[in-house]
Length: 352
Image (cartoon, rainbow, N blue to C red):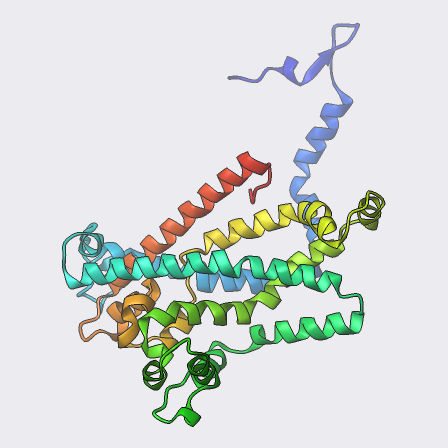
């Protein structure tokens, strides 16, 4: 569609075209757009300088590694040449993972199932805990006591994964002598929750206990730190809302139900969508440090499967490892889109 002069100019009483003042302002803005952008950057250059480290992190750890995803579709045997120059083999790596009753395919589907179950249990039991902690912190009237409790719950997040897993192994360690058992194993034996034989062999050597240990340590590590967002949303609630509820005769529990929870609902929905996006992104470092060959059946996840197949195997196949991780990420992306769509239609709150 061609633009005409009459679309931008107006006709005066003397049948002469002239430019409308508003159009003149728009033309000036478009003409000097980049000049305005440059002046804004120079004015707030400190803020933009703070973005540089984050941009570099995303470039080197998020975007540049995508080049290696080409390995899913390239010949994995020619590792001596760059990925882009290898022979194209199509979707054969995906076929080896998905089809057939080979041990490789069975191990992949087992890892996919374990990844989903670990993440799903973390969503069911781990996601509500930061909200509960935030509600608890809000009810503590003493600032000193609240700060003390918050620091106690934040500290595990700042420990390295190696330290966390080492503590876990010490707490549930096995021993033929009852006195040398980990304190948790010893307590469970005394309470009759587990047998002496299970305590002797070690909880981390029992497949049925791995998921519980993983979830409990995950809540211990991250619940306090994750409560910061919810606590910030709670303290932003206007005091007049509490006063109105008190006038209507609402107690503490009623105020939580009818004032606090509705006020932080949008924050909860956004955090839930984000959590669903990472539903299949299990922290494989902790799994790698805790699991062993005895617990593969419940502990092996996609990331540890990819690590074994792509690096630790006697005949490493980086193409299969990349294909496994790609499928994991694609499913995660679809989960984010689906959760965001449902949240937008159900509550008019969404991530995008």
